[in-house]
Amino acid sequence: TPDEQAGLQKPLGMLVARDCNKFQDLRRPNVVQGLLEGIHRCKPTPHVPPPVLRFAGRTFNAWHSALSILEDQITAIQYSDTQNKGDAEDTMAALTDLYKRLGESDVMCGLWCRQSGSMDTKVGVSYLQFGCWSKAQEIFLNAMTRSQSGMLSNVTKAEQTVWEEQWVYCAKQLNQWEALSAYARDINQFDMMLECFWKTDDWNSLREILLDPMPSDAAQTKIYDICNALQEWRLPDAEKHCQEAFQYALKNWCLLPDVAVQAYVPLMQTFHQLVELHESALMLDEVNKSIRHNSVPELKNTIQAWRERLPNKWDDTTVWHELLTWRNHVFKMLTETNQSSPDIKSALLVCGQHEESWTLIKFSQSARKQGLPALCIQNLQKIMSFQSMDVQHAYTKTREEVLSRIDLKTPQELQLGMNAINKINLDYFNNNQKAEILRLKGEFLARLPDPRQQGQFRVDDAHSAFSTALGTSESHGKAWVSWGNLWEGQLQAKIDKGLDDAQKASYAEYTVNCYLQGVRYGSDRARMLLSKVLWIIDTLDETPGVGAEFDKNAEHIPSWNWIFWVPLLLGALGRPQAARFRRLLTKLAGDYPQALYCPLRRFLIEKQGQSR
Image (tube, rainbow, N blue to C red; front, side, top):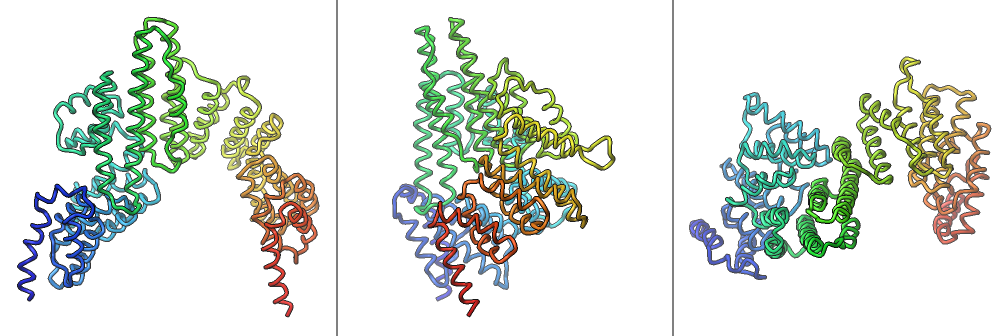
C-alpha cells in the first residue's frame, strides 16, 4: 500500500548510509550497488535523500544508479503540484556534484543554466564553455559585486556559490595565484591555500599550514607533503609520502566507473605528477652523491625524459603550470646547491638556468596557443633575470613575445612588439630565424597606422619587410603565406569597392604566386589556402597574367596537395578553366591513381545520368 511504501523510505535511506557498508567500498559488486539498482527499478521509486545518494554514488561506485534516481527525482519535482524548493535545490546540488566529479562539464553547465535565475550565470557559463576565461571572470565578479550591494535580488545561495567557484576556476586558468592566495587567506580555505603557497614559492607558509592539517583531499595533501619534503631535502620522507600518494590515487581510480569517463584524465595527470616527483627525489639524491664524491651528477637522462614527457597541447594551462612550475623549482634547487668545487657548481648553475628557461618558454608557448597572450608575456618576462641564454632560446622567446603582442591587437602592444623586433641583433641567428623575425616585422607593419597618411597602414613597409625576409631565406613558407595574405587583403578591398583596374590584376597575380610558393615550400597554412587560389582562378581567370602565373607555379607543387580538391577540380571541368585543371588531374592520375579513381567514377556516373 502507499502508506507501507512511505514507511519504508526512511529506513531504506538509513540502510544505504550505514557505517558497516564502508568496508565494501572497493568490492565489485557490493551491497550498496545492489540496493541503489533495486531502488531505481522500483515503480514508484522510493524517495532517498539526495545527500545520501550523492555519498553512496561516489563512495561505492554506484554513479549511474544514483544519477538515474536523482534525475527521476528532479522530473518528479517539476511535475509535482506541491513543489518543495528546498528539495529541488538539494537534488540539483547532488546531481551537479556527481556530474562534476565525473568530469561531465557540459552537463554540469547545463544544470547551472537550468537552475539559475540570473542572466549573468548563463552568460558567464557560456563564456566558460568556449574558454573565454577573462570575460567569464569579469561576468562572475560583476555579479558577485552587484549581489553584495543589493542590486540583484532573488539570487539563491547555490547560484552565488557557482559564481565564487567559477571565479576561482577562471583565476586558476589565468594564473592569478597572488590574487587567489589573498582570497584563500580571507576565507580560510585550506586546500586553496596549499595550492597557492607552493605555486608562489611561499614555502614557509606551506610548511606552517601542513603542521596543522585540516580536513581536505588526502591524496592532494600528500602531494604537497612531497613537495615540502623535497624542498627541505628530506628525501626519505618524500619517498614515503610518494608511496602513500600512489595508494590514494589508485583508490580514487578504483572508485570511478568501469566505463571511460572524463574524470580519469585528472587522475592520469596526478599519476604523471607523482612520477615526476619521484624522479625529482632521485635527481636530488644523485646531486647529494655528487657532493660527497666531488663529481658532476648524471642528470641528462632524467632531463631528456622530462623534455619529451609534456602535457597534451589541448590540456588546460593549469596542468601545464603545475608540472612545469615544479620542474622550475627543482632546477632552482640545482642552481643553489652548496658544491665545494667551483667547476661543478658552475656546471649545475648553467644546467639549471638552461632548463628553467626552456621550461618557461614551453609553458609560454602553450599559453599563447590556448589564447592567453597576456599570460605568455608574463612568463617570458621571468627569463630576463637570467645571466645567459642559449641562442635558440633567445630566438624562441622573442618569437613568442611578438606573436603574443600581435594576438593582443591593441595599438600599444603592437608598438611594443615592433620596438622589441627593432632591438634584435640578427647576426646571431641563422637564415631561417632571420626570415621569421623579418616576417613578424612585416606582420606588425601591416597592422600599424601610417603617420604619413591618415587612416592608412604601413602596407608599403610591410611589403618591403616580406621581400627582405624571402631574400634572406626563399624557402621560408610562412613568409610566403604572410605576404600572400597581405596581397589578398588588398585584392579583396578592390573587389569590395567594385574597381577593375590593372592593380587588381597585379594583386591577384601576386596572391596566387605567394600562396603556391608557400605550398611548394611545405607550409601547412598555405595548403589550407588552396581553396582561395582556386576561387581567384575561377573569378579572375580572364584577367591577363593570373592563369599564366598559376600554370607556372603549379608545376612545382607535389600533386598530392590536390587530392583534397579532386571533387572541386572535377566539377570545374565544365567551366572555362577546364584545360588548366585537366592538366592537374592528369598529373594526379599518373602519381596517385587510386585517390582519383572513386571520385572520377562517381563523377562520370552522375554525368551519364544527367545526359539520359
